[in-house]
Amino acid sequence: MVRVTGVVVKTVGVEFFCYHRDRPGSATLRDELLEEHWSYMDRYAAKMIARGPTLAGDTPTGSVHIVDLPDHGAARAFAFDEPGYQAGVYRDVLLRRWRNTLRRTMWDFPGGRAGGHRYLVLGLGAGPAADLAVPPGRDELIAYGPLLSDNGATWLGTAALVRAPDPGTARAILTPDRYAGIEVHDWQFGGRQTTHVSPAGGDPAREDPH
Image (tube, rainbow, N blue to C red; front, side, top):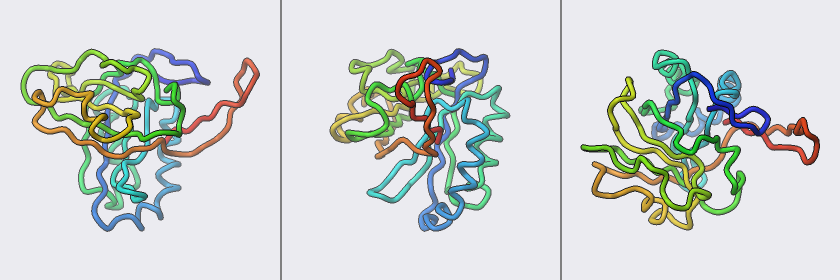
């Protein structure tokens, strides 16, 4: 699924969750490469489902991208050709097939790009699949879906972006005893901000494909 001028359009690609985790002490290098990172991601803007940094206070700790790509080879190229990865900004990368259970992008989130606390909730699975259905409070979910094996047959966990009052509430969208571990990270909408006017007229729409 991709977003074109505010409309969700079905595609024939495969959805992937990619989380680059920053290497300690790499903040300066990250900042130096920011324009290169954005230029690289501009190539994927039409395929982006969600994007943005995880944070500890005001310091980035990682970079999330959920993107629709042709296959796993294209996903690996997306993750490992990224300028920050090539330069050594990141200590590791989590790349998994994913399913867009909400069938929308973060730009369609009813709560907009700002206001309230936003979190990445990442549950790494152990055993039978869990939390496949969209949980209650759909309007507080920015992105939600299962992490899957390369062929899509095996459930490996759940990745969600959610607005919540605190980390505990965010964590509670997943069933605790069905995961080997659940991570919760502060997260925010990211990337460039450019203004587009809807073809139907009216107020400008904000496009931000980090």
